[in-house]
Image (cartoon, rainbow, N blue to C red):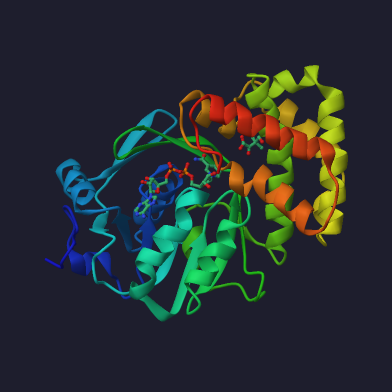
Amino acid sequence: MPAGGSPPGACPCHERPGGVSWHVLGAGSLGSLWATRLHRAGIPVRLILRDRQRLAAYQRSGALTLVEQGVASRHAIAAQSIDANEPIRRLLLASKAYDAQAAAAQLARRLSRDAEVILLQNGLGSQDEVALRLPQARCLFASSTEGAFRDGDWRVVFAGHGHTWLGDPHDPTPPDWLQHLQQAAIPHTWSPDILARLWRKLALNCAINPLTVLYDCPNGGLEQHPVEVATLCAELVELLQCCGQPAAAENLLEDVWRVIRATAANYSSMHQDVARGRRTEIAYLLGYACAAANRHRLALPHLQALQRRLLEHLAARGLPRH
Ligand code: NAD
Ligand code: KPL
């Protein structure tokens, strides 16, 4: 058995039908959602877990469980701890934005020279932090509207069908492993301008999520605050244009209202984090937007006031400011 790793219930020869293995870091919501679907399609996958205790716990459980439309299926995916020695050529890094850089630093010694790393983080900023840590790898960025949550250890519930856009800001050539996503029925599109996608999603999140936290309401509750939403969108449009992202700025306000109405009964991810006393990804959303405005010496008073109010709100609840 290799140091730091073992495939529960799986034969290693069956795990590698001649292809490059996917390594998936983070058996959280999206990492588990990807790993189980890839595994189900017969594509070799390895889970990378935080340490040997987590690995031992996973091995006791024996599998990841995927729940889709109330139906559970078990997937005995091979796993290893982060300190294993197996080289990595294709990595899905599916951590929160604030954990991505440290995870990348821990894995750097294991990445081969032709490694590809798919960064599945919300917001902006973590992708560049990781790319700096992994100069030998091709870093691809992803932006996803799929929804998943964990309802227990090693269990993930597929909660919302969506789509994932992937791209490489430095190289428009699509990777050949996109066919694996096709085989695994992971809806996706190769995006020649992934930064525009990520900026647009960031702008949507900045216009919606902080207000839902401050007003303690589901997304639809923002219908009561149309002027605040419109003022923030106007400043976000200025920011996007100033940052060379005019496509991401187009019809932002209309799109924000479309999302608010389409998700009216849902609580935003930031609201859910705060309600559960969990760290938010604020530094990679509103924090990133405000830092970009400062870099460009752009005065965006409402966005900056929103950041101050949100930081005070988090501090009052003992939650980190970053
Ligand atoms: P999550 O917290 O459920 O999962 C992250 C996992 O990474 C956790 O299991 C954590 O233990 C693991 N991890 C962190 N550092 C690690 C390390 N060094 N070694 C090993 N494991 C490590 O998060 P998630 O909900 O899957 O979100 C991942 C990203 O995707 C976030 O940026 C989130 O905003 C974004 N996103 C999530 C959803 C969703 O529905 N869950 C939808 C769209 C976007
Ligand atoms: O992505 C979101 C989130 O909750 O994080 C939406 C639904 C777009 C709200 O901003």
